[in-house]
Length: 269
Image (cartoon, rainbow, N blue to C red):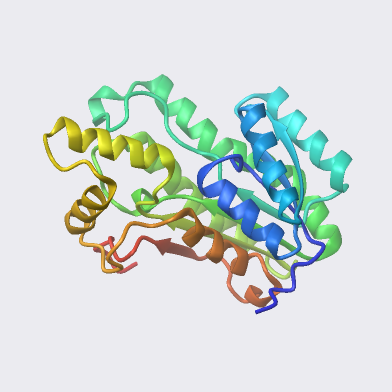
């Protein structure tokens, strides 16, 4: 299927590894020109080299988008390279503090830092590139959230709350941009296997004295999470949906929150 994306210009935050890298690679296969972003120069450069070796058009910038200087560096690179941006994917995110920390263990500093990373960085970039999209009367904005945004989990409450803010932001921005030709949507991944995810779960199984080869670990997680898909997710599962949502073919899809979780979620909305 031709997604009609050839020549479009995209910025994907946090795209030097994991889900973001898969999105960058997928979009370049559709003819999109891409800015790859991350914290580590070596990772950014390696990702861009891989894309170029496979015929894609990509450029990179390493910066911390939790800082004014980091945002400025990223925006300057995008402007100098493409002039304007048609597609913005706010993928960078995460949480500070101890993973899995409970409510009373998460301090105010971690709440602020996590909100800044996941939400305020996205808001700043949206403010920056909206004028480009309005001038073109076409644009696509994607927030990468998490199924944690819709689940009342006690572990990592600051992360879940920040991702929920992105879901809400998508809907309010969609209403504000009615009739402009710009669509805004959220993707909420479930359990997606990245190298860090795989290593962490293998180590946890080994510590618990359980089989720690990856097929055994994966099947244990599939059963625990009751995944209807029968497997854990891959970054490419997210990238394929993003590619469709940012295409002209998805022009009537606005303000949605699409869960890609292999059937893990037990709620209906």
